[in-house]
Structure formats: C-alpha cells, structure tokens
Image (cartoon, one colour):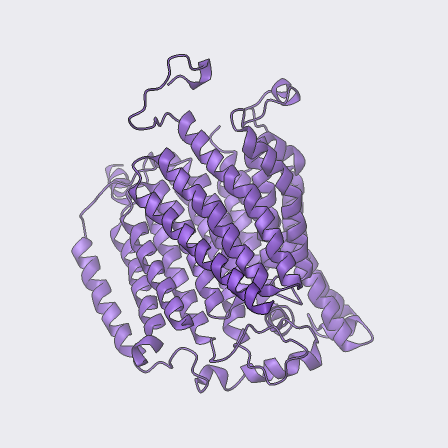
Length: 327
Length: 112
Length: 119
C-alpha cells in the first residue's frame, strides 16, 4: 500500500515539473516550484529521510519561494516564447534519458537489503554512534561529528553566497519609502490587510520559539542548525512582509546581520581551534570535556548553534538585499 | 471502547479525505477566483480538521497527540488568514467577480 | 514487482531530463534557474532512494527497540548539505539575474546576446 502511495507522489512530482516548464507566467512557475518542493519533502518522508524532508520543506518550499518572488518583483514576469533550438534539445534529452534508463536495470530495487550501499560503512555508523557519541539522531551525529569538516565547508559556502549577493545587490542604508509619522500613526504597509497583520504578528513569536526548539532538539529528533536557521529567517521575513522593510531593518540592522553572518562561521571554526588548543586535532570534540562522549555532545551543540546563526542571518540578509532594492 | 475509537477515527479520516476531494473538484470546476476560494477554504479547514482529529484519536494520549493538536490550532489560525489575504489582494489589484454587478456606492479606495 | 522497484529511478530520469531541457531550450533566465533547481531535486531523489531499506525506519535510534532496522544515514547527510548549497547558488543566481535586468533591460538570453553583439 505504501508502495502505491510512493508511486502516486512521484507521479505528482513529474506532473508539477512539466507544469513549471510549460508555464509562461513566471509567477505561476514560481508558485508551482514551491508546490514541487513540498511534494519533494513528502517523498523524502515516504523514503524514511525525515531530516532531509524537514530541510527541504523549510528551505525549499519556504525560503526559496520567498527569494524567487523577491527577485520576480524586480524582473518582468512573463516569458517570451522562442522556438529556437527546441528540437535539438529534445533529441539530446531523449538520447541521454534512454542511455541512463538502460543503466537503471542493474540498479538495486527500492528497499533491497542486499544493496551495496547498506553493506560496508553504514552499519558501522549505526552501531558505533550510541557508543561513541550517544545521541539518538544518527544523521546529526554524522553531520556534526564524523563528517564535521564537510559541514564547516558548507557553512562557508552559505556565507560566501551571502557575501556574493551583498556584493551584487547591496544592503541600502536609507529606505525612504515610508515616513516616520506614518509609522508612528500605526499606518503600516498593509493598510487594507488587517487580518494578516494581526494574525501574522501573533504568530511570529511562536515561529521563533519553534525555530529554537528545532535547533536544540536536533540531537533527539529531526532538526538541527540548517532547518532552525531557515525557520528563524522565515519568522523575520514574515515580520518584514507585514510591517514593512523599514521596521524589519530597524529590528535587525544590516550591520548586525553582517556581523552575525560571519560570527556563525567563526563559532564553528573557533570550536575547531579550541580543540586544537586543548591538545586534540582540529574538530576532535573528545577533548572538550573529561568524558569523551560528553565532549562530543558539547561539540555538536556548539557547532549546530554556529550553523543556525549563520544560515539564519545569511538568508535574512539575502531577503533584504532583494526586497529593499528598486525602491 | 477501542473499536469505537477506531470506528470514529476511520469515519473522520474518510470524511476528511472526501472533503479534500470535493475541494479539489471545486477548484477545477468553479468559474472564478472568488468562488474557487470557497472550495479551497473547504479543503483548508474541514478537510484538515477532520483528518487531524482522526489521527489524534489514533494516537491516543501521547505526546504525538499534543503535537497534532498544536498543528490543528496553527492551521485554524493561518488557513482562513491566507484565504482572506488572497481575496483581499485580488480585490485590491482589480480582479472583479464574474457576472456580478459591483454596487455604485463603494467607498473611495475600493473603486476600480 | 520488478517495475515498481525501479519506478523511483525512472522518475529521477524524467525529472533530470525535464530540468536539462529547461536549462537548454528556454531562453528566459529565471526559467533556467527553476530548471536547474528541478535538476538538483532529481539528483536528491536518486540519493534518498538509495537509502531506503525494507522494514526500516528513520535513522533515529530509539533506546527500547532492539533489532530495529534503520535506514542508511549517509546519503541523507550528503543531501542535507546539498539542499542548503543549492539554495545558496539559487540566491546568487537570482542576484546576477536582477543585475543583468538592470544592465540590459531584458532577461531573455537571445536578446542579451544580440545586445552584446551590437556594441
């Protein structure tokens, strides 16, 4: 029965992807992209990857749609039809698709326990994590401790993207779109939209609380720094959408955002240097405490905090770079 | 007691699925944005409420039931708000309902 | 049953080709970026398909379940980082598109090429 459910979800995915390609109005394509990401998250959940599903839902369906809409506000939103090169592209993809399709007949079936991927390294991780690190979520253990170097590289990638967007678009210092007396009189952006204003302002603290929950619960269930950063950025973006750019930029000024972006990555690297100073290798958390298992848990909490701070501030800075432009 | 709870949750889950199906058919068949939002609102509130209540009955008195109840509260807050925001945005950007005469005594900021 | 076991891979191929077609054949830059994200999502689907095991559950070790089979955590870690890197590149790509629009006035790449050739 679950097999049929999985097949149905996958077919919906293909239908949505075809819809994205064929939509001429870019706004439609972006919203279909959000639906695509949500279906992807449901698929990941059916395939037993809960952390990945949470990340895809938070980052893909949430923040990515907002960024695409932010960019769409600055470019024309209709696509012009062009027939150039279409048949060549169709020929290439048919050929490539058939070649890869021929290769899939040797692949292991879905859920096959004898597949090579389940044989060599994975059972070691599943057995050794309760002994060496003793946190229930194996994905966070691998992400934070066994493969911690990769995650440091990824935080640097996120930071670099933020720096790149800030170089290209910049955070404006003066946002002269609303006068102070309007703000003081309570006339905000959404004059006619009273209901979303009230409900949104009611929800923002709960979303932030949920982000904190996901951050610190990453060792015991699905969660971790990336998801928490995305959810926190979503809370502030909701606030910015309701109250306007000026309020949001008064709430967290651009200078603070830039400092937070760098300090998340600095915290991560700092933990590594600290372990070196305490006598171990770079990012060897065992030396952080007298009990190596305890040290591992401390290390994972600290680096997840660095990841969360960095991701949240980068996503927020990118949103402001798009939203405050062209006014 | 247990068969009663099971039967009730079965009824709620199937009913919720039916409401979602009706909402989906409505979105496809109704002529205009404003009428389609009635159908979408049906999916949002009745459908999810019944499905989540059915799941709460299945979960019994555990932490999972509490989390599901929190999701119900959240959806009850945000679903109608989203419908309102969509309808309001459509109204303000000039989309008129089909086959409807707009009254002539609308206030200043709602004239098109 | 064999077909059903391979369905994930075929959906992966279809999505990959849809993404590739969008990047190749559509001149609009925003559409190309959307096609690129479909391409990336297809690759994520392939990796997460590999991690499912029959009778398994999410790789969160419950202390009271002995002999429970867990899904493979390693592809999940890889895809988690890949998703975040994907959105980083999407954000950077969107910033470039916005700047191109400001410089050329259009985001169709054949018109941009003509504008470049005219100079």
